[in-house]
Image (tube, rainbow, N blue to C red; front, top):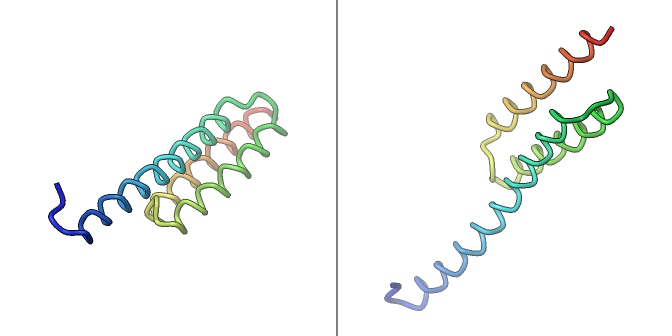
Length: 88
């Protein structure tokens, strides 16, 4: 229980940020799943482009550490590349 007005405000701000961060994390996770579940190369490329954009935005907003964002992007690209070369 906050003892001062400023502490109460901090609680409200933290809750708003928590919900916003949760929303962004959820969007990123969904985008990654869509890349992995895409069936055609065109769908996969579009899903990858969207996932990359969301990861970049999440890193810029401080929701993910920039290295985590880069690591996830690298793994996604490797996954897509592996499927592309296997399909040839």
